[in-house]
View 1 (cartoon, chains in turn red, yellow, purple, brown):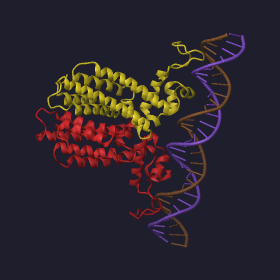
View 2: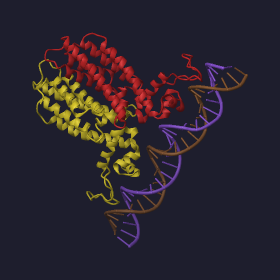
View 3: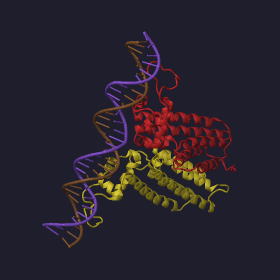
View 4: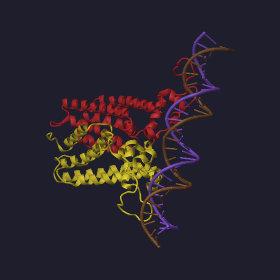
Length: 215
Length: 215
DNA sequence: AGGTTTTTATTCGAAATGGTACAAAAATTA
DNA sequence: TAATTTTTGTACCATTTCGAATAAAAACCT
């Protein structure tokens, strides 16, 4: 889990001094994974140092103190998540296909890693800090609401295209669709199997889009 | 927030030695609140000592080490939550009334305290430890699945009573109903207002039970 | 009153934690 | 080659953390 040290491949020269022994993006990813599993308070600088292969002064020089590192981890996670989600939202197809793609893209991230289900980083690690650090709470809330808006637009477009039954309430559907994404995070971290989580996704799709024969 | 010390009122004599200066149940509640806000790793023994008004040796004598105290906090929370939920599930009324009662009972707990939304203790504090402590993960999973079964029975009974429309899938509805409870926890802790959360509840009820005029 | 028992209060200690100082190392530039 | 610049590695520091040891306090029992 530690990136190899020593002179990194001369990928990009950066001018004068000694070259870095690590790739900042890789290191940030490894620090993120540590926070993801153990939370902010549960991840010591020694843990982070071991995970990234950087010693503490390097960590400090690159990212600032522990809080700053955590914020950098959130920003990086959000950026990645946003990229994947944007793609899933926009790839086209029926409403059901789109929702299914969204849920499975998210679930793939929630089940990634080697600890048996970590959930969403913002929910699992971010919300742990939310009560202690208002700035973290605000970032998490923004992330949630950005997704909310995505679902609202998706459902509104589906309604406009006539994909929804006549009496359907697109706004209500969007709220539930977004909420069930949070539920998947919770339950992935609680250790539910992929089969169980897939069943929850199917139930959500059936309720929103109408039932469909099993595959 | 600290219970008063000194000789407690002679509620129940317990025989020989010096009487306790605290009520174990009250102290456990205060310790639970500390874990709830700050998580397991984020709550130091000093924090817990200050919150309960017990000094460390007393804490240790009463509950064992920090892990044991956390497990005791989970057990107590589950017992309280189960009592409230059982009542909400069984009090009768239409499906919509019952679901509304369940969600609002839970939401009241999720918004309790003076830190602006803490969510469910098991999700907010428990899941933070789930990856680190498999026993905690198992307890949380059990709690979730106990609720799942409650919703399954509730929806199955509603179906049997003919409260659901003909084509409805009671099992899928139960999964979503249970999942949205998790979503409420997440969003309460993210700082959503009661009005926002009520709107999510209403959306869930509308989707499961059919729309209803606003009050 | 004197002894017994249980809890509380003070204190201590070893380890871990977050953060930093400083010199050695590895590159560039002159 | 020598000076410069940036990063690394080691060591250190003050504080916090968890836990335990020990003595004082407050009740009961005889």
